[in-house]
Image (cartoon, rainbow, N blue to C red):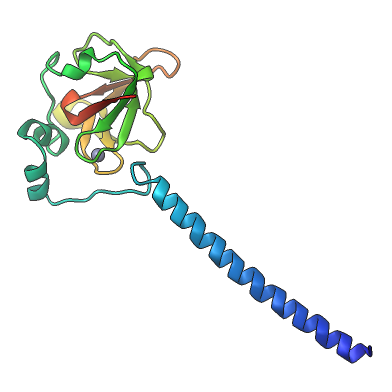
Length: 175
Ligand SMILES: [Zn+2]
């Protein structure tokens, strides 16, 4: 084999390998994306639910709409979710985004379902709320943007946080 032929062969091998590497990374990239999508159907983060105000009005009950879309607050001690102590998950009533695990629920004595942390970091989003002359941290669903309640820093261990939620903005499903 002369050296020119060897050089040609090496060059073609290199080109072939480059094409293979490019194709396979595209294929792997696409399949990873598809897997991520199917995993996130009920997960926060990439999933977003956007509806018009009129559509929300149609799909939510009047009480749910007042809290989730108009930042209302339910009357204390009115939510049946206050008394739930079973194992399960609390979901956003508007978009079924999982929000809180039952293991993080505690009795705050406030009359609103209270938790010391969300089920995952991306489950909720937090915003500064300056309504009523107070500076509070509003908690919204990270999928549909619905208002859920507020978070305060007088909660129990291990986080020291109190997620004070409106029960009407959530549903509960047993494990
Ligand atoms: Zn939601």
